[in-house]
Length: 98
Image (cartoon, rainbow, N blue to C red):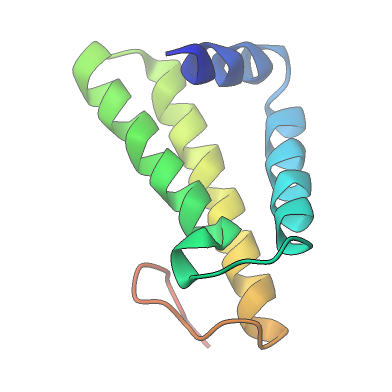
């Protein structure tokens, strides 16, 4: 519950700061040695997005839906970057249009 309140506080201050901090976190995580595909930041951000969507459905707080959308947007951005730089293969959870 602490993470949700932390992200909710950042979101209420500024949406762009939340998005940029998620992208920065993802790039920092890429510098670490990642053991499996599930450790990559794109799938991690997507998991958090799904968790916030579940919170929205349970508690009906509109901010949780908006945070979920921001997490999903950052996850897709990271996935496109990783595929473009040939660090990972395309994943079925992401939209891959040409």
